[in-house]
Length: 317
Length: 185
Image (cartoon, rainbow over all chains, first blue to last red; front, side):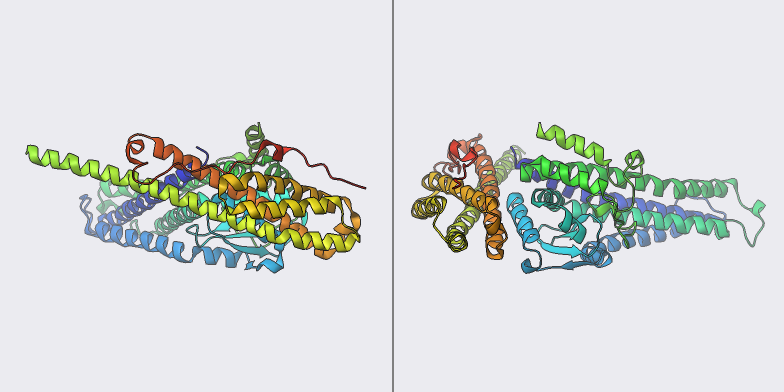
């Protein structure tokens, strides 16, 4: 059934968001426990696995991760739009863009999102929103000037797919997960380097080997955890892009529009000033990276454009 | 003990039936909403066409055959629209064809394409045509999944008597897919 595709994608994303939130909280708590445990073992030379420091630190980090997720869901969209300088427009400012967004909201069966424009020559677009009823789609001025109606429709349909599939909310939570883990890992490594975990006042031979092993475990976790989390985020992000391309064609029934648009976006040379790494994964094509084979590497936010076009050609039959 | 097991099974079956019933209600509501969206766009097309025809007529200085055809098709569609999806479909399909002829006419006359009023109306009519197509697509997808749901077991046993009738697809006749011929003089 044609409609069940993105209804199923929505359900999967809802479930994944909950799983990820739970996983994040557990991971942050475990990380916190490990830090507390190491601190206590350093202070008291006691490596007993039940550590009151650990429990306190675990609780604090779990609370922080839940609070941060809720905050970013509440204010994240506004912040991203402000950072990208995406200004909300009315129908009279760009009637064709407005009409195309309206067409795609009808095809997707979701409420009309807000429409925004970024005043730059670069060709790009992104969607934000934590539900289908408070979403918005932003495109650049360059995109508006250089794409024809069918191409614009393909790009808007891709963004509408992110909204209908609830990718926007999912990626917000994923971003928070990775950010928090990176932050804790960074603080831990700094702490280890400055010696707050290791021997400072007292002589090291007073410590048991158990405490030393714990420090090494903590060091390994602090190095590996953020890299693994980042790789998961990027893999999820690339998968979401493929799905949004496919859903876009389901809406427009015209793969050629998006194919032509992606070709133009890949060829466009205009740089996108003021885009930070924090928001790069939100755009239809990566605004920072160049589109070579390296973008299909482990840490790429987006699949290679040539690969996306090839998949779209397959859909066209 | 046996009593509790039987009670548990009864409760589970009741929950299952409630879910099926709610699914049918949801599917029907989605299809009805989708139909009202088609209806909005069809009415909008009926309102836009006389404006565009008038502007084109003024710009060209004479009444072209394409224009009379569009107006005729539009009036027939307005009359058929009140009767529901099955009756409206052929008239709206004919109007779609006539509208494409009108848009083709505008495309082929440079003095029309340069006219700002025409340009604006052309964009509005194009988007309305697209919205009709996309709302029809969404309506048909919704109706198809609703019809499958009401015909699935066990819903099929009670769907009819609970008032969940079969819904009609909004099909446009085959001729609509032909490329319209633009009459040029």
